[in-house]
Length: 145
Figure 1 (cartoon, one colour):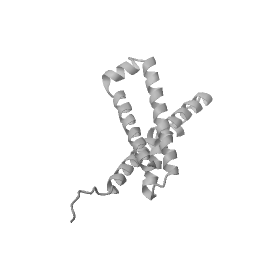
Figure 2: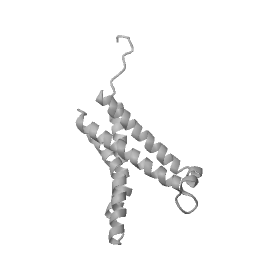
Figure 3: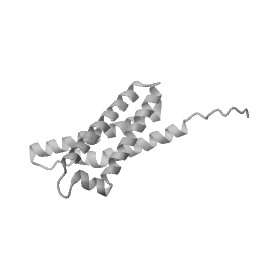
Figure 4: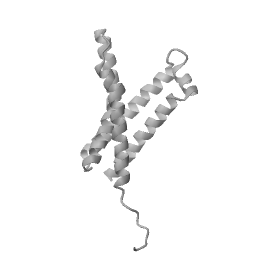
């Protein structure tokens, strides 16, 4: 049961992420969310709620994967993808907090949030999907060979 729950949460996470990013890069929606020059209240609520939902799904998947008997390489790919989902908003907030408190543009958390986490997310997500397809048991067709 937990294995099916992991994949349900994983696909929910991927789906929410694709919808979230797709809406941001759609020009009419982008103009509605972020206005001409300044972010609108609707855009702020959208981005904040999307970040909370993605982080919540990422933490849920991280806990489920850690507690479930998922084997070897698949577990590593899942943990990489989930840690990257959780790391994106965390490192973004840390970058802004450190930069705001020190009045110095802090590059480490920024690079982690903008470069390292998306690469980890891509590698972990694609690796998990490939291993899931590769290790999928064959369906019984009712014919003996």
